[in-house]
Amino acid sequence: MSTAPSAAVAAPPDPASPYRWRWLALVAILGAEIMDLLDATVVGIAAPSIRADLGGDGATIQWIAAGYTLAFAVGLITGGRLGDLYGRRRMFLVGLVGFVVSSALCGFAGSPEMLITSRVLQGLFGALLIPQGFGIIKATFPETELPKVFGVFGPVMGLAAVAGPVVAGALIAWNPAGADWRTVFLINVPVGLAAFVLAAKVLPESRAEGSPRPDPLGFVLVSIGLALLVYPLVEGRELGWPTWTIAMMVVSVPVLAIFGVHQVRRSRAGRAPLVEPGLFRSRAFTGGLVLGLVLFGSLTGLAFALGLHLQLTLGFTPLQAGLVQAPWAFGIAVGATLAGAWLGPKLGRLCIQIGAVVTVAGIAGTIATFTATGAGLHGWELAPALLVTGIGVGMAMTPFFDITLAGVELDMVGSASGVLNANQQLGATAGTAVLGTVFFGLLEAGDAPGAVTVVLWLAAALMAGSVVLAWLLPRRAREEEVPV
Image 1 (cartoon, rainbow, N blue to C red):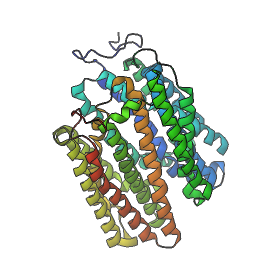
Image 2: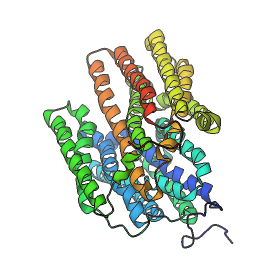
Image 3: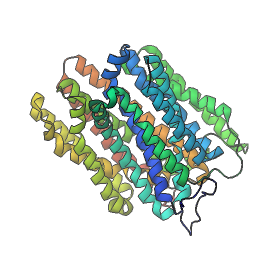
Image 4: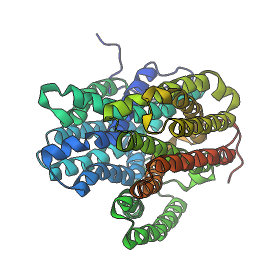
């Protein structure tokens, strides 16, 4: 007979008696995180095979990636709050089932239109699934274990993002049953089903105290505001930044401002807002939002430029380009282990700053390697610099989530998680849009070596800026804060 708790009896633990199955719950949550991050990066590798099979022009291929990103970013804040209102475990399971079904639809798509629609569904269900993880963790683990738990998230995100091209290239090369590009989506079905079985067994239920009611007007306002902001960031570079893309971003500002005013009024009236205004009185949370924009923007821009340069300029295959980045992934694991076991708890905010400095040194080494080798680069020659870069990333990301979310009350954690994830997605999207525009502008001007050099220096400058921005955070998680 199984000794795992049933769905009916699983509940948040008493602080004096930690929840027995909390580490298995973390495995289920991380499995969902990995599926989401892999699906956000596989289309770039699978695009040529998709186009050869289903047809479509460049805009069609762009939308296969953009449909997921846009739906995911727009739905995150609402998805996080729904967990507070209706139960985080319940929303996690609903989101996981929807993600698996929409992945299967992607895998069996018979036309570009069906694939784009399925990718939008994937993004929406991902936005319901992913924000629940932080809330379940806060409700399940004792305070003393949270640094170790949150310390896992940064490395997992970094590793999954770097591993995405490798996994996608390997699956397409494997080509089981002649499935070709479809394998990058169909792999989610067995993985997702396994995660569902585990999650249904071990995840405890938790939600906000009382019976808060939904905020439909807030949902409409934030969805419109984020769509106006994210859509031009996703599409602007591909379209050459026409005037209407700039206009959309400008209009998003007053729409989001109206949303903010509505949230404050709703909170003062004693009704549950979609985003708790009290979150922004936390120095750790507000500082983490600013720092997160820069951190994720620089890392995404770095990965974007590196992968494109290896393939478009140096002629590496997708699988080769992914394997070249393996030392980066290994470095993230090393840096995360150092930060999680010793540096993070001991140094707190300083660990983020040291990690950012090490990352800048690694990027500088990468630039020096490209400059010295030119078109005759061998992949192994990048290994030392990418290893250093990865160690820095692992050190910087490991304490980030723990410090940012440490002071958030459990009733607000779904709202906080949705905002933090949306902020992360916005930073990554903006980093790709801005640095991608610079990269392709120089590439089309005939300066391929200059394209990668300039973009890598810009990524290094952003990372260096995070050293300064980290001072917005308290020195350590759970340190007494001065309200902002």
